[in-house]
Image (cartoon, rainbow, N blue to C red; front, side, top):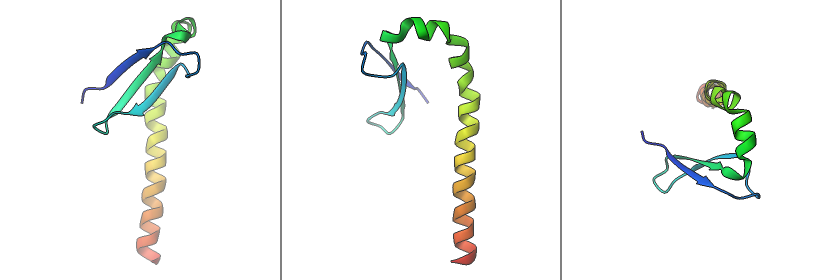
Amino acid sequence: MQIEYRIVNDEELPPIVITIDEEDKPKVVINKHYHTWLCLYRGEIGGIAKSLYEEIIKILDASLKEQREMERYG
């Protein structure tokens, strides 16, 4: 899957935003207004991917457990 990346320069937006594009796919907006911060924390930002994935798995597991309980007990 190709992820769309967009670079903006807007002091109102946070440094990085993950949104949804017109085709319901992830879109990443990187705010150049925070270029120094982005450069300074580039390693930590890059490392977020694994922990973000793990957090999404926790959310999915909780949802599936809840759904299973509903199936079992109506």
